[in-house]
Image 1: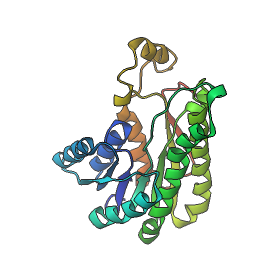
Image 2: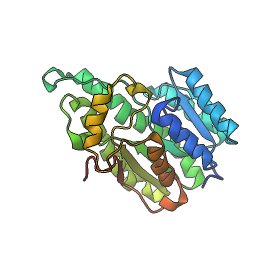
Image 3: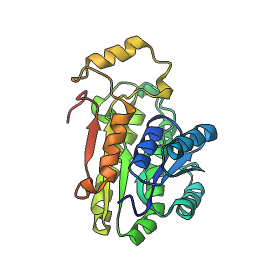
Image 4: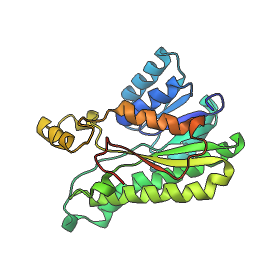
Length: 248
């Protein structure tokens, strides 16, 4: 598949998104590295891909904004070709807040990233995927709905909604040759978690059957599989990457 079309990874200037972008580039995909606040970080991701022999370019866009998304997809197509693989990964702050203090605006903060943004991106990418005769949408979800961690109700609700989108889209646009799946990582420490203490990490690790923390590369490997020809008959699925921390 990598010979036709490009990949768009949103929120790819750091964290999981950067690892996913590098992994897909290593498979031969031209990769659009979307960013909003981090042009220097995005440039470093692009430079690392190019240095490894791949093709990539950075694209600034707020993927929760209708006008930005409408401009993003044509810009990617003009530079790298039509998007065949879409990875909605961008996220925002995820504060912990007691359920008694959660407002509708707090819910909207999460829904903008995990329902609105993927919807805008899917709709904008669809014409190019139609022209290519198919495509892949790989959502980056979470195992938080299963964990039901206190204080995270708004985030968990939005992530549960994202899974429902995935499954409904798989039925709706499957006849176009487009697969839609969701990768649900457990807690995979990245840059944003740098301030979290070792005790908290160890407490989490003790509950993981594989007895270790996962790595961003292990999430990226699953995304790469779902983007590949090997996953051509896999759609509507949720694949947890959490070492068995939550099962089901």
